[in-house]
Image (cartoon, rainbow, N blue to C red; front, side, top):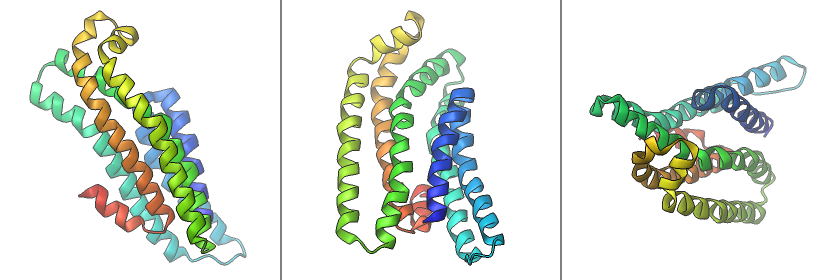
Length: 212
């Protein structure tokens, strides 16, 4: 659970801090660096007199790194594909504006996964099956209670939101935003579920699911 706590806290602080500085690129960097930072902490822990299984650490860290990189690609490849298909900077700009707003719920709620991961890991390691189920159920209910209204609100007010945050010149991005926000919502739920799987010591499964 030590590694999971370090990983989740590192991800939360890195993503929030780097998003503030470099926006989307900062989020990508935060996701990529967090498992590496956790690995460094754990290796330092290994050097102490306390016993720690370095092979187990590596088996956990490598799938996590692949998972975070794959998840980041899922969230960014669409813009690259749109740019390559449309070959029009104006249309790509409209899509980019819509995509940035659609990621707002994702970045707001991803901290839930960071908090949930060490908590679930602790209950699982203590063989508290019912407490684990209750914790996951409460977390998912909280996620949906927050995510669903935000998603619907952004979708139904997409055009006005684009006009407010950008300008009337970007009004064409309203329709893409009203659709993209649902994809971002599913991505948020997927990320939280993967955090739960990682907490249950199944990073290989999340890696395979994300790659596929």
